[in-house]
Structure formats: structure tokens, C-alpha cells
Length: 224
Image (cartoon, rainbow, N blue to C red; front, side, top):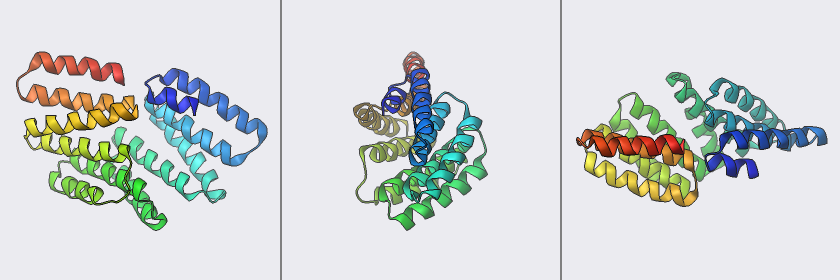
């Protein structure tokens, strides 16, 4: 839990060190479910620090352990994380396959919260491939998902803004992204907050506000 807090606060090196300690304790005790949890979170620390291949390898290990112990929800989280890492490494088709499979699993588990977040990830994949219509449709499906968390709401609102920005509606995009930033700051998810600030900088640049765009870029780099 301490490592997760440090990671979300934008302190990845500290998070990595503490998570390695947690994994060592779990391995020393021989408790496989906790080994799986610590391995999964260690993968997230590597992901945030840009070591995507290492993160993917760790999530494959943790997913196997979670499935062995019948913890389907945590195995589903590993699938979602793997889809994110594949997208960020440019492997878009593989990312889409994993995300689609994860969404099927979320529906089977009746996990509306994770289902909404996976739909946001699928929307991001469509956005980055230039299919704004499908991205918007997926976000609409996510918006109709009941019992969402603040994180899911922030992801939906932010990606609505990204789609609007890609479609040229810069002013609407800026307003929506600012709403998402409010939620992300409240949650304390610094990495996602930094990404949204970066998109806000793009919105400012598209409107010819170079100085403001540069200011946003500096804030985004500091967050991530």
C-alpha cells in the first residue's frame, strides 16, 4: 500500500524500492496470493518508470498466480495493465486484442467498474488509430456503466476531451480536460494527471497560445 501511494504521488523510484521489499517479504513467507499482488504492483512501478517489457513480464507472472488461486478480478487487472503497456509500446493490435479479451472477462465477472475503465482504454486505442466515431461510441458505453468510481469518471471525461481535441473542438476539449484534472487531483493520481495536463497543452497550442502550451508541458513533465 505504501508503494502504491508513492507511485501515485509521482515518486516511482521510491515506489519501486518499497515494492521490491514487499515482494521479498511475500516470497520469504511463501504466500502465493501475496506474491501475486506484490508482483503485479511491482510491474506497475516498472511501467510508470518506462520499462514496458519488464512490466509485461511481471504481469504475465502475476496473472498466472492469480488464476491459480482463483482470483479472477486481480487477473483481470493484470490484463488491463498489459493492454496499456502494449499500447504505449506501439503494439496497437496486440493491445486491442488483450483489451477486448479483458472486457469480455469484466462482463463475465459483472465488474462494471473495471469494465468502464477497459472501455476507456479501448476508446484511447481507437482515438490513436484515428477512429474518433468509434472512440466516442465506446465512451458513451462507459458513461452508461453503473457504479463507477471517481477514477473511471475522470478517465471518461478526460478521454471525451481528447476526442474533442482531435476533432478540432479545442475550447470544449479544454473545459472537459480541466474537469478531469479536478477529479484526478482529488484522487491523487499524479501520472494520469500529468498526461491530462499534456493534452491541455496541446489544446492551448492549437489555439495559438504558445506560452501557455509551454507552461502546460513543464507541468506535465513534472507530474510524470
